[in-house]
Length: 195
Length: 289
Image (cartoon, rainbow over all chains, first blue to last red; front, side, top):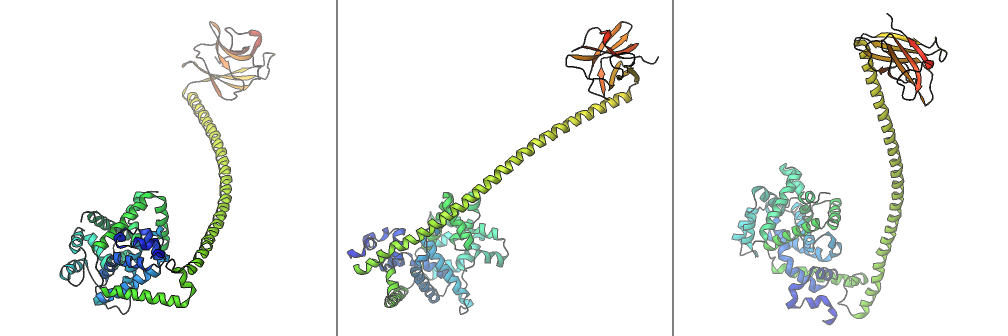
């Protein structure tokens, strides 16, 4: 136990929540198993949410998440702090994996679509099958978006569109899409502080 | 650069969503390093998106965790059996003998990029210096030419102004001559010894009492002398102005004269005299009766 060094000491149960991002990153770079477990415990639910918003089929979503999480641990060397926070990098890997999946040939169209409303009401009705940490807070949050903001969040978070696909498919100028995304994110930002 | 406009363009949100091109991503990273406001906004967006995902978190089945760690075990086992390369990435948990090569290798790994950066940096510095000297030379050259052009321009403006004044003057004189009722009184130097070739014309409008002269031929004087024009009337000669001998074939306005039987020019001391020095009489002429 002594030889495991600083990382494992931090992982003592009482200090579990105190693991700082830079320690987390260096532990991941060292492929330290306890750091990977800590990462899983802390982030798996958020990262799985990124995928399961886009892919409603739970089995497929879990399969995609499995592959994405392995990729995160194995490709940690391609992450660098100057690009942004670790979580952002991980969430992008998950989101891209989900988007790739919805575009693959074997993915049937019926299991693809999801919307904010389905998601929000799905949270209520399926609360037994999928454990959502704070479903009511999220529903509240999404209802604070106006129609335009809801639309872009719907496309990006729930349908896996990129911003340029939104512009193209719905014939909205790119700059308008961008500013709607920005205003939607700022609404989320403001209200997240409240709930 | 307008940082607020950049922030509100929505680009940073797209960056966090991972939707920018390679080139745009590099731009955001570069600007975030340079402008703390951009960095701060970026972090705020990242935190908001992370917080949203945490709020909306959905736990995957327990079996997923088991499968993931089984896969990791399998991958690691495979790497171990493949030997050396994998061991380098699995560091401090190993026993001492294997930790040694890792630490021995560290400086090599660190040094090489350092050297490469240093070489690249000095190359960049040399290239930058060459460019700096080149552009400095260009700059001074251009500045000199610019100054020369400015001078040339002011000379041109000055002479244009001069032409304008001359033109207006001439035009006024022409107007005066055409409008008035002037008679020409030639004054000649023939009767006198001083300047036989001298010839000056007086233009006189007796009604309006206006007098002009135009020099046709008049020798230059030294600096202490002036030509003075006299109108000789019933009250004797009256000095009505100094004549500029160098200003030929143009009208020089003299003082007003209502009545004169003759006009004459004498050489007088600088500034003119109250009465003419008769022995210095140069030209004389009489109005036609």
